[in-house]
Image (cartoon, rainbow, N blue to C red):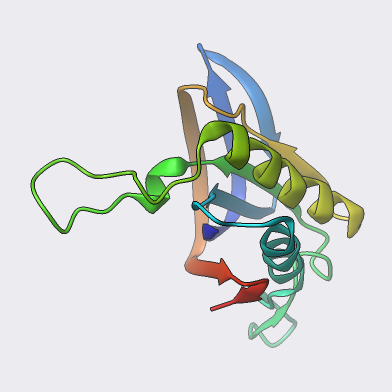
Length: 151
């Protein structure tokens, strides 16, 4: 699995002009499932999301997790994170998991984040979404998970 994690002041997802999910202070996580990913990978990704210390403490050092900071998570599926643009001009998405395999994995990440006590909102799997965010910092990190471990 691959994720792009952004620390945000606020973020929202719109589908067909209507807001379907929004958060205040927290993390916007774009997540894509790769062929061969497992529920163990989803669990490892969720654990890393809730435990990464990317929020400032009193000394303004990145020393707090989303849990410590009382933040929320907005999780949005994005298969294009698995795009390969090394050849030609059009991205290849052959590394991305098929939708029937990817959707349960993305749902498993969201469920595990919620089970860790963090409010987790989601986009709509497979929908054309407009994602709006205010990136704080800016802080943006890329996470790759395979074999149940963050790479």
